[in-house]
Image (tube, rainbow, N blue to C red; front, side, top):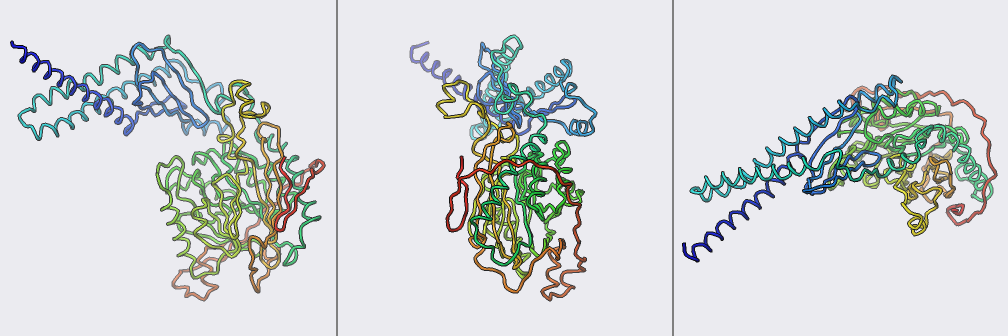
Length: 579
């Protein structure tokens, strides 16, 4: 063989090797993609996991949970593809916990149970990866063979070879790496990390909220003193209705605290703009006692669903569970069936969010636009409600109200003329409450962080509002409160502000009177058409309004602390300076 022929042969084999190498990479990525498109499900008695391969060669197993991640890094001879297992609690576990038939110690899987779950998961991951690798390379080479029909045999050989390599190399790496004796590091992140160092942090959350009631009562007393001393005389006469505005509870039972606010401030109704739970499961509220807490308030509880209150666009499980609580008023109890609530003459409507927990999308604007459009069409011939509720600001900004629209979702209070955004009553809930503290004293000092409260998320204070309407059915005042660090047991005062209602609603309604004598009623929004003289045949038979009657909460003895100065006054608000 001549030198030229040898060079040509080397080039040919080099080209084939390159093609096989590229096809191996394609096969590997195809196999990984298959495990993401059709992930593997494995489970123990109380837990389930969704397993998929990662495209990076990290030799790491990651178990993300809603309260932090567990990561195991292995010492590798050959870098192995990363594994991700999304761990979830099975529904059967929440039922047993709610019934008190299971102890925490019973939750740990046995070694045989855990090994069986792992073996089943690994086997299914293996064959799905292999199938995905083979199909991907076959598809690529069939396209090539279609334009080069005489080379079909070569394409088949290359496809099988690449698939075999894509399976054999990662498989061998995983076999040699993922062994118990090769674990190099185990670590946890976020709330899991915090709990490992503070095992009692989750105990007695409702008790901590009850203790925090004394602290918040002090803020309420301060607000009252400021209002009496500095606020202008309330226009429109005496107060006709007081509303407590809350949002984004996110599974936290802070209802002992809310109950104290209701009692101290003589609240007539609570308005909640959604995200009552975290993961869209009604059982979350049963586990934490939220529904009993709502009932204990003893006043109507007006509610619209948020994006964390469902697991699909049509899921209404939480709404059905809330409908069983006597004092809950659902402004959209089922899709498209709106209701109007009248509290002492103040009319309130609203609509649910169609987003849901863990929804994947690049643009939610269209769905929010559709929600607002549907509400506008449904109410275009009816008198504007005094208050319109929705969860997200995007849709709230696309509807109008006689007094104000109200939304939550952002975990931060905001205020504009005709629009009010409520912060999170629980600081976003326990899941959003903490972050990983700095690991060193130097890092703490660099972040200017107080070691005593390191770990609690400082960007999301607890906040709530009290909105009052006067006898002329116009907004009288808005009192806003915020504080933090309730969960850690070291409440920290942020601020109290009092806003003149005329800055929210410059134009007062004419010819209307609101008062406690009017009570609380709920009726389908179509019933308003009857008041407008619309033919009843067009809207169908209309039920009589439902009168809402609730049992007031028991009085409680509360110790108040001395109010804290200082005060800053401007034209439209009275605000205490944050500490």
